[in-house]
Image (cartoon, rainbow, N blue to C red):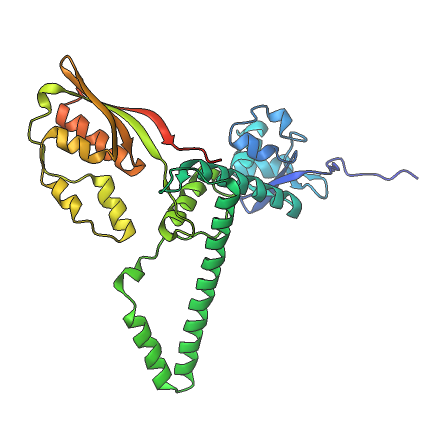
Length: 332
């Protein structure tokens, strides 16, 4: 005996679902695995390679397509089906299985580690670390963050319980312990808890670098940039406006350190003196005709301040050219 199937029922398997709730209705589209993220980041541009079928469903698992009347009510009567599919694809919530999610996390983690390994060096030798060493250091930070969070929770629970049980002496001790903590603790150092799939690898790599530099589980520093700076020779001996490099000030504030030697730089000096104050290591400098140029290495945090200073003091006649974004020495 033939089994009559509803005309709007379609069976699909091995799919990734993208789900969106709109107008009190939940809609789904069926996509090929791993293709949704590729389309969102621009790697894949052909919609036919992303969608298993160009249709909108109320339930993909049941093979139930969305009625035209429901789509018109939720998205507007004049909205084309292709536009509805695109809106769900780009703005909807991606549903992935456990194995697929684990594989995605592993890919993002590997990408983050590779980016960090290419941007950080041992400050003593200027050599890069292997991806394995960076991975281990990040794992240490993640574990330490978990222990710290658990300790804070246990301390708070113990203090609260002491107060609830009428043990005023322990409760007071807990409050005194909190009060004895330095004021700087109100602004915690950058932490690391691991990668997520909802943010780009590049932005997470920046967070990872900040945490590694702040906590130093292994000695690390940002790889230096190699620059070429030019300035009209006639301006070199002119007095510069007294101001310290902004990017360096911000970095010192983050590190919680005070460096008296920076106050000398803030007093002014000549344009040449101020340019050289940004450069950690001068490679060479020379005057050619009416132009002075200097090659050297700077910390990435000083690059913006140097560019702003040269632009303002020379009124656009000076330049700051990046020759190498990250100068490192490969280890054996």
